[in-house]
Amino acid sequence: MSHTKKTRTTVDIYGKTYTIIGDENVHHTRLVASIVDDKMNEIHQANKSLDTTRLAVLTAVNTVNDYLKLKDDYDLLLKKIEEKEDL
Image 1 (cartoon, rainbow, N blue to C red):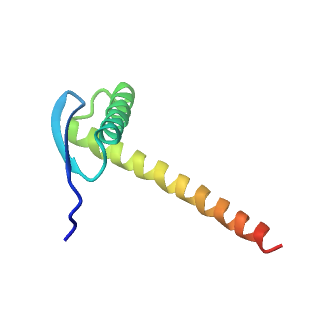
Image 2: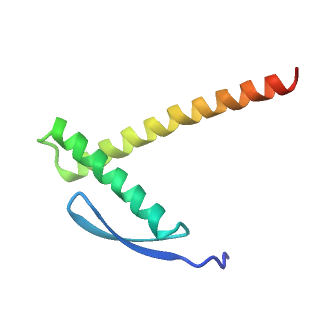
């Protein structure tokens, strides 16, 4: 069991207040919440008829899509670095 002190942070996402408990510092947690809030508002502007649940799912899908693209880019860069180091 981890003995890391958990941080409790209250954030607002899409008009609702959430308390997030985790290992990250308050600034990081608020940054993440702000990005989620921005993404939800962005998607809402393009799809005003979506209910909150569908909006949250679309936000999650878009976020994971962005993450996977960045991960692929990161993996490709690591491979290129390894290839250069082998020369």
